[in-house]
Length: 282
Image (cartoon, rainbow, N blue to C red; front, side):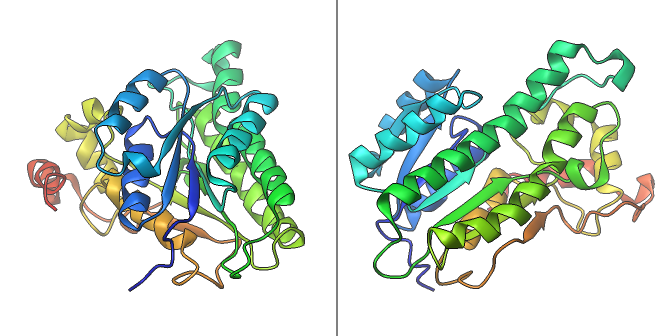
């Protein structure tokens, strides 16, 4: 199926991480022009991009997305290079690695997580809408698209990481509001969110190396496997595609093996080693 993403300019925030790089590769495979955002790991991102066969169709931009002016500058830089920005994947964020109850979470961490996950998404959306207002909609009617990276923690909560959970839960309000606003700029514009569960990124792999962690995660999932970054990336591409998702807006696509808030399997029913092996399968 032709997803009609050839030559689409797609700005991907947080492209230096595992999911972000997978998103970049997935869009590049569809013939899009990726604009890869990085900040603290920008140099590593640029080195990685230089090794990709599609590097001539892409560009890397650096910005601290917790600052509105830097988000605006990133979109202006993309438009200067490619003329416009057709789609945006707001993926940048941070996941605190230490479990702490709310009364023990330092104020600095609480504010920092909300800045990294929520405010960066707000400023990214604001900058994307500004870029769309300047460029106008595509002449071919393939509407502009904005996709946020949420989390199942925003739906079910996550003990010990209330800062992460609340920052992702707030994205529901952005999706449901901005789907109504984008059509004033592009009558076929759409806003959606992909909501991953546990995903085998470099950041998560140390935890996923523990059989007890794997069993705890998989207990609430009918499909006993853990997502790979490519699984999340393909969902992003689907929602940005004017062919596959032209009439989907304001929705949340959960990519978490059917996860829900109740136990599906007892620990002895879960082969943690087999779950890990599935991560290496294509």
